[in-house]
Image (cartoon, rainbow, N blue to C red):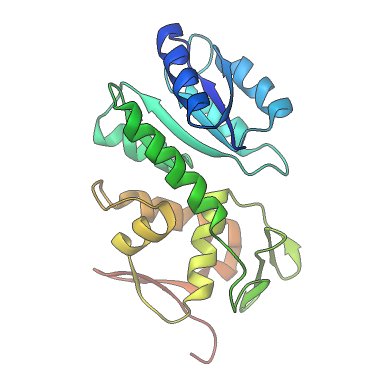
Length: 229
């Protein structure tokens, strides 16, 4: 039974979400503050967090950062907020959110989005390339969820890991920003694709000089190149 942690200070909304999620077969807990959400996540170990951005103590963005830094725990995050401007949605996705839902919203649609996110995380079965994927000095172990460069571990967010894995599985193939939004983020290209560029930049920085294997194709997107290709 998937576990959902609701971090929401509006009691009526939190109760509504809790009721519907339990009826839909989820195990649910509620935290009313950001600090309580971070603490509860450590013991409850949710599969997904519904996170309000405007909390009474600390910003939801900070909660997201702390959750992403939790060692050994891959947790999906759906941000739920009244702030629906494009810049806010982009910022949420850049912080590693798996989806972004604007209030007011349909509970039915939210349940569908939750299942889509959980399905996406679970539907990464070992394929013919699974296990170890390599390019130049970079090695990615899908089963262990580990990345190394020259044998040294590199810490990536879950979204950065999926992004790198996508490139390693498609060497030499140009990936448009729209394709990456669809295949990595699991969303349609309804927002500016600048968020893709931001994540590529951060991924390259974490990979160091080896990040040059991700080449920019101006006006199109990106592709992974390796020596000899």
